[in-house]
Image 1 (cartoon, helix red, strand yellow):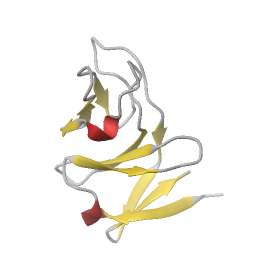
Image 2 (cartoon, one colour):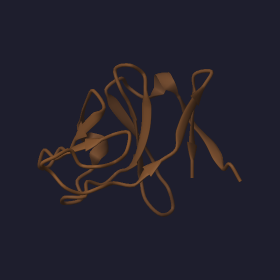
Image 3 (spheres, helix red, strand yellow):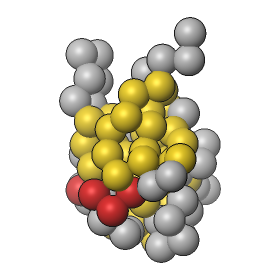
Length: 102
């Protein structure tokens, strides 16, 4: 039931960047912060569908590359005054290996 999938080593995800995981239902962007925290979001901005994986990561947020909407990596919610939400996916790092629950 856990359904955890090994997707990468932590080093394969650039700091302040993302790696895209292709899924049958939707692409998932796996982000790494400067503090090596890892988060996974559906790779689509709720505003106009921009690819969040191509956005800039700062702190615990990613900025959509198309229109500048800020999304919180931990819960997928747009940062005020923006509105909207992106689906999040459970992710964990064990011994330098990143796992995604699908």
